[in-house]
Length: 143
Image (cartoon, rainbow, N blue to C red; front, side, top):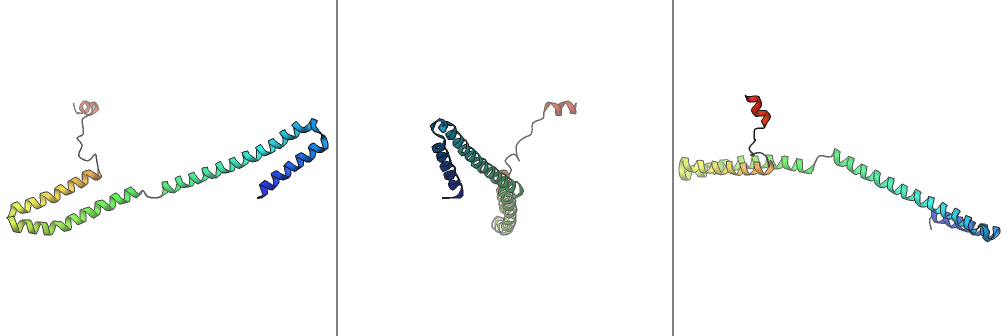
């Protein structure tokens, strides 16, 4: 039994003792008084819990806003890593393509390298290759 339970038990015993001393005519007032004290304790406990949970949520939000986004750093590292690997592999692919089929082989190897990099760029930046339409403001300005 913790201190709060002991306090409530003490209040209940005091209320019962007062009822014995004062009689049944004060029973309703004594019960109302006891229930009001219990209600106040419940309200204060709920308020403490709500404040604690709000503080925890605010701390989580503050930490999230200060920390770098995992997706941003992953994308940055992925882009640089992919580009470096692509350049490293370009050397032997160029040698193999050029050695086997001369200039056409070299062109095919580089078309493949460029194609893979274009696909990767489009995957990382979905709006990269979308056509931009002229707005009515642009066409009015050009006239």
